[in-house]
Amino acid sequence: MSGNCAYESTEMSALLGGTLRPGGFSLTDRGVTGCHWSAADSLLDLGCGAGATVGYLARKYGLTVVGLDPSQKLLATAKKNNPNKEFLFGSGEAIPCKDESFQGVLSECTLSLMTDLPVVMKEVYRVMKTRGMFFITDVYARNPEALEGIKTHQFTSCMRGLYDLNQLQTVVTDAGFEIVLLEDHSELLRQLLVKTIFEFGSMQAFWLKTGGTCAAGFQDTLKMCKPGYFMMIARKVE
Ligand SMILES: C[S@@+](CC[C@H](N)C(=O)[O-])C[C@H]1O[C@@H](n2cnc3c(N)ncnc32)[C@H](O)[C@@H]1O
Image (cartoon, rainbow, N blue to C red; front, side, top):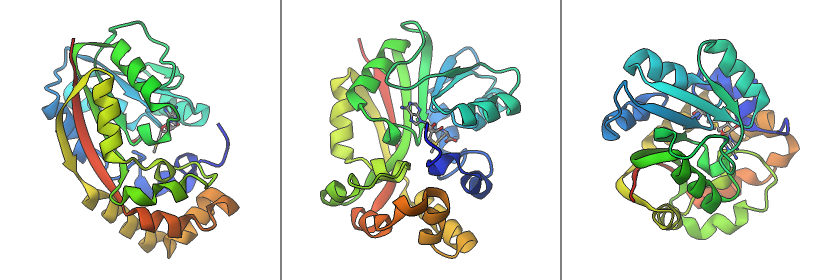
């Protein structure tokens, strides 16, 4: 991956202190409860980043979680922090695992970075056991009409891949999942933005540190989209 990824920057990891998403483990805990996962279950963390969730779910719930990520840099950190856990190099578009390997899949602030969502959904469906649960948290546009403008920016951040939530629900159900829960958690994103401004002086200063010149104009376009944060739980149906 290119070095121009906000989530690979040292600034981002220092700001968030482990996880690379709004809300830390608060929504992860809700996901474990909502998906009814137990210690017997084997899960896939799709886009595991530095492996924070893999370690957390093992420590707190005794869950076996395999981490998958296309960033060699983040995978190296994940392995260093979790020496006894399994991490795979790969992407959501081509998951290097056998059919029906997992009871569940987590995708915490990662789907927004993937380019071909229908292909990713097909892959997630393939590697999950029937009635397995798919737990998603991510950014979305509360004003999806403004989304066209954001695609013109060559900047690798989940903020560039904000979802139109209606379109996302269609892609999820078309792939063979039924949505069992969908909640708004935009407050967590707001808290992160406040923290970022407190630490860096402004969002512009943060984007410039993590995205260089590619971030120019990005901020204004982003505001028009009214970014929010959601949590979704979907079940694989036969
Ligand atoms: C915002 S970070 C979140 C990381 C981790 N889930 C967490 O919350 O700490 C996004 C992650 O998605 C990964 N990613 C980007 N493109 C991906 C793809 N096509 N398939 C799977 N993961 C991807 C990145 O490498 C990065 O680790």
